[in-house]
Length: 162
Image 1 (tube, helix red, strand yellow):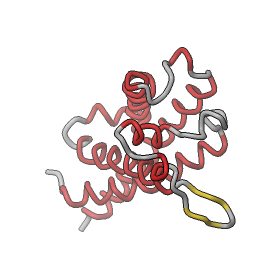
Image 2 (spheres, rainbow, N blue to C red):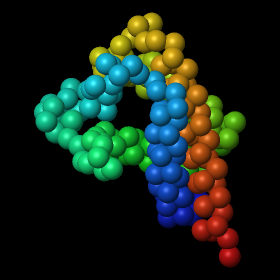
Image 3 (cartoon, rainbow, N blue to C red):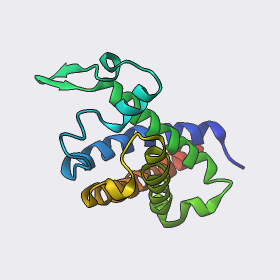
């Protein structure tokens, strides 16, 4: 029987940590060119929903650098939502855990970056995206969800052991 509270906590913590992993991944293998990243996908998505650019491009300053807090809010919201879903749903639908979450991460990448976001016009059609973007995003989503798997499993185990 699932301990819902433990599963949600484990997924939430895993989502924050995996969000940091994904940001780090994108510093090593940037998925987009600087020009395409002037308005990144989270910012563009919000603008498509009517949020003004002055909000979507809002920043805070840390170590003399302007950092996009609104983009980070969407990034970590996405990461944490999927991690909680994975942590809970994995108890009911075990096949999503195949490959320790890497196949699920690849599926999320395909659904979002090759399907939903191009269909909405948030990112270019898959054939118009550079191969570097596909490479970075596909592997990055696999590393992101593997991180969710490892952390949520261990934290769930610790929260439910007596």
